[in-house]
Image (tube, rainbow, N blue to C red):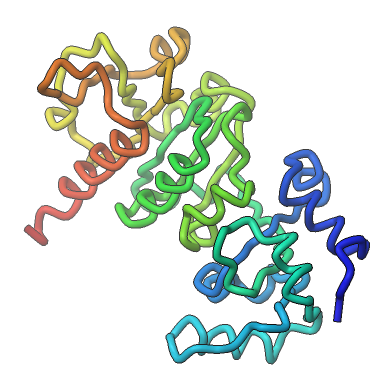
Length: 265
């Protein structure tokens, strides 16, 4: 059992939890909690850490955790005090893991009739995590993020995805315009931006489409808007200028889902 917070493994986990550079170099991240670990593909698990006071419940997630723990070759028991040192939550569930980062090529995002979310300079971890989860629920085929977005493998983003990070392909581009160049001719780009004249539900998203969402405070950069095929607006009442970025993404993605599944209505 690990009983010292100065243990080398514990110090390393603190680094990958707090430093994006370490996560990027080592291609790993820290995942915590029953639900998240039960969703983690066993092939990505590098090491599991279990608190001495951890106990199984009778939920489906706990059943999957039992199976994972029985097959994982590298499990470390940790004292409750030391586990609290590495936990990123106020109420720890007593189980966590070092996980290898899933990796994708841009082509992995383009299967079927592509529906993409292109994100520029998103900074709020909760927003990014919610958009990953919403994209999965709405049937998007992938997410393209600019390099200046918050790190998708930060603990807060990973937790907010609720496991969707393992099932939603994503690609990190240097900037939005370079992403457009790589995807030009494969999808049509729709900018959610102030200055758009046409409401979002007046476009046809049954064909390959990509919604482009900008920074929470500043929106999309002018050069990004100029490179898009269409500008659109989400009509609002109450003298509001814009919606939360994750909310806007959800509205657009589910409009595309509605159009693509009208037979279900």
